[in-house]
Length: 124
Image 1 (cartoon, one colour):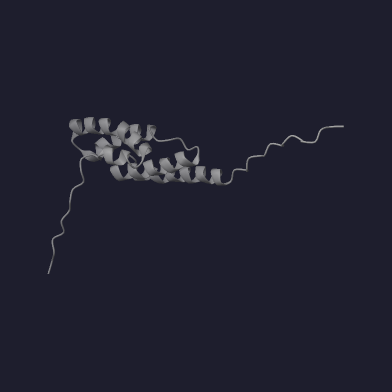
Image 2 (cartoon, rainbow, N blue to C red):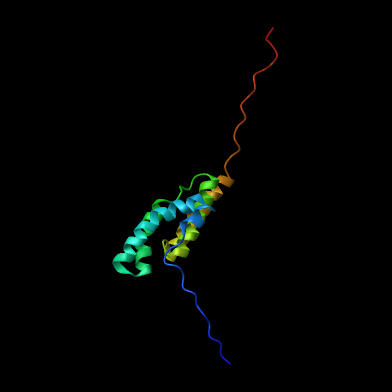
């Protein structure tokens, strides 16, 4: 006995309102990507090409790899970019590796030096 498998097609483009409420960095990337993506879809009507063309705008909006929160958001943007086709799989491992290296530098930073407190005893 065979069963037919149903496949639900993905929406044309992500709904940024839902993403914005969960991660503002991903929303910023999507806001940069989506207008270009929609314009390319009108021109070519081929989702992979439109996503790829808009991908540079998405990557340009990604946070810098400095500070824990930015690195975490960079990873979230990379993962979401892969899912929507803004970041090609061939580039994804390089981006995630860069985030991993940046994160390891934060973990291995020396502890901040404490400032010497003034000597409370007066000199004779």
